[in-house]
Image (cartoon, rainbow, N blue to C red):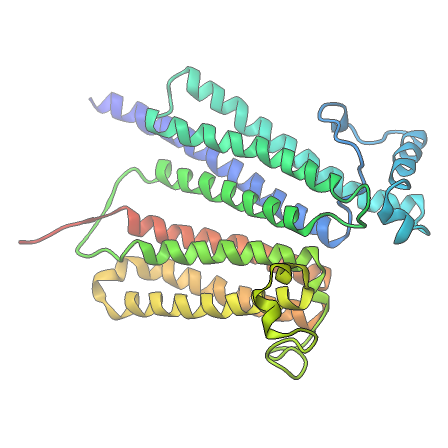
Amino acid sequence: MYINFMIVENKNIYIARWLLLTTLLVALMIIVGGLTRLTDSGLSITRWDLISGILPPLTLNDWENFFSLYKQVPEYKLLNSSMSLEQFKVIYWWEYTHRLLGRIVGIFYLIPLLYFTFNKLIKKDSLISFYFILLLIFVQGLIGWYMVKSGLSVRTDVSHFLLSLHLTLAFIIFILLFWNYLKYKNQHAFIYYKKLPSYLPIFFIFCIIIQISVGAFVSGLDAGQIYQTWPLMNQSYFPDDSKIKDLFSIEAFEKPSIVQFIHRNIAYFIILLFSFIATIIYRNKDFIYLRNATLLVFIFLFLQTFLGILTVLSGAQIIIASIHQIGSIFLITTSLILVFKNSRCTIWSNT
C-alpha cells in the first residue's frame, strides 16, 4: 500500500512539474507577445510557414527576401517607408521569437501529454481538461495567424478585436494550466471551519480577465498614448472628445478615448471588489487560512494599479507598459491561488 502511494506521488510530481514549466512558457510568450505589439513588430513576418518558418533568415539574400515581402504591406508603405534593413531586423526578431515560443509551447505540451496518456499516468477525470487545453493551444495559433493576416491587406495594424481575443485566450490557457498544476501539486484538502463563498473570488478573477481584454483594446488602438493625465482625463472625468451616449454605442470599442475610460473604470471597480473581499477575510478569524493569499493579491493589485497610472502618464512608454502587462500575470497567478485555497477547503464541524 505504501509503495503504491509513493508511485502515485512520484507520478503526480512529474505531471505537476510539466504543467508548471508549460505555464511559465505561456507566461513568457504573453510577455514577448506584449513587446511584439508595443514595438509594432507583429506584421514583420507576412507568411505562416509552420515548419520552414522555424529557421530565421540565415543569409543576406534571405533577409532581403523577407524585407521585400514586408514592403508590400500597408504598414510599410504608409508608416515605415524609410525603414532600413537593420531596422527591419529588430521588429522581425520580436515576431520571430513570439512565433518560435508558440511552437515550443505546443511541442512541450503535446509530447509529454501523449506519453502520460499512453502510460495511463493521468487521471481519467483530468484527460478531458488536458486535451481541451491542447485544443485551445492549436486554436490560439490559428487566431494568431488570422490576427496578423488582418493587418496585411488594407489596415496598417492588426485588428484590435482579434488582438484582444488572442491575449484573452492566452490568459485562459495560462489559467487552466496553472489550475491543473495546483491540483496535482496539492492533493489534499485544507480543513477549516468556514469557507468563503466561492462566487466572490471567481467573480474577481472574471473581472480581471475582462480588464485584460479591454487592456488589449487599449494597446491595439494606441489608446494609452492619449489623455496622459490621472485621475482626470485632461480636465474632465469623462473624455472631452466624446459624449456619454458614445459609451453605449456599438462603436464604443472603436474610440481610443472611450476604451481608455472603460479600462480606467474597470480598474476602480476591481479595487472596490477586492476591498470588499479582503474586508470579509480579515474581519472573520475563520478565514485566517486565506489571509496570506489575500495579502499577495493586494500587493500585486496595488503594483498593477500603480503601473497602470505610470503607463498613462508616460504615454504608454514601452518598458513601463510591458511591466504593466507582466503585472497582470502575477495578479492572475495570486488570485488563482486564493481561489484554489478556498475551493479546496473542507469544512470541519466540531459538533
